[in-house]
Image 1 (spheres, rainbow, N blue to C red):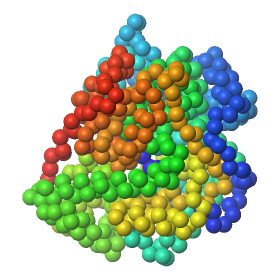
Image 2: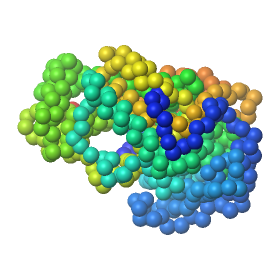
Image 3: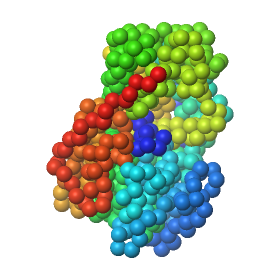
Image 4: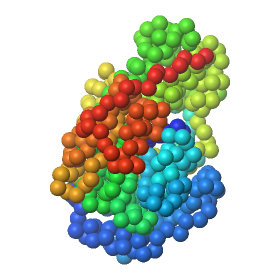
Length: 520
């Protein structure tokens, strides 16, 4: 489920046999006694060793206010004395020392595959100043991400390229090519990562979080997870409820085992269609500025006209329909992209392709990071859950959905299709349920009512499963990742909880932020 948060103001069928990984029997993604003991041992070792923070490597792109270090975690928690991998960690120290300091707070921005090393930079933003006074802000790259035992499935040099088509109505021949591509990608993951690949799971991400807590010298964890970070944060809450001090879930993945991950992707595609319609209505409302149509349908016709033109002659030789669709998909994550996208489309149809090229052209400089992120995303989600083995099931479900939600359905399906060819652990996801007597303190949940990447039903489902949780909803809004953003109401609740443990009523609502201004 692609759900990398655009956070705050910074900036996630086995048709033929697969060689390279031995087959394993299906089993539940449960805590496991050996793994539980392994986490406890690794945490004790990490607490004794701590983290030797120092100057951050230049490759991280962090300023001098941020320190970096590493923490060692077992590759396989069932064998904690076996192979270890090192996770990179970043820190900005609390600016208020002494009695005002409340410890460290760890952040994950989503994914799977999102790199949270940037998080300490938020200390410089007004919305985070009071939190940064009280807490060390801790970012990290989860296993497989960035420099944390990085995963890869294909040659990065060829990963970011264009032009490509946008599969709104894929032909049989196009589908056949995507099947072959997905099969090859799954083989590449197995070939490049070997048997170690099976240990890159959401459950192990939750276990790593407890080792990180111990390495930071924290008896209890303060954690804020956005998007996918809410899912393994929920796993952590279920596995280690008495280890939690404060926990925030922002833009929430539906944790229902029946939704992980195939069902969630279908729900996501349907939700993106609704946000795509919101953007088109907004553009139509500002026809006098963009001249793209007075109705949402006319704006769609303008977009499709541009897509057909790009199919015949890609902009700058690299921007085809696929690149434009990928760029405009970001409008579903945040309405801060709305005016930018409308300007680019309007200019392109008037004969100026420069804004569209700037917006959508493949960036060779980001190829390595993009390939790594996609590899982690694929490996974690494919390892986490059962996926349909039969291509006819995928074809049936996505064909049906695409009739009413064509914008994102097929590109989402084809991105996840390697999981249909997986021959890894094939686990059943943990059924997250945390009772009142578990020892978990009250938790805070944040969600936008029209979030496309993590549809709102997921927030309601997680609240139902975690006793004592409070849900703050931004009404009528669709931005993905709302904590620390421009909505003062949301931020007030977030700050009150993190600084004082104060929570509002079980279901609390904030008015939406104003819609973006139309700028030419």
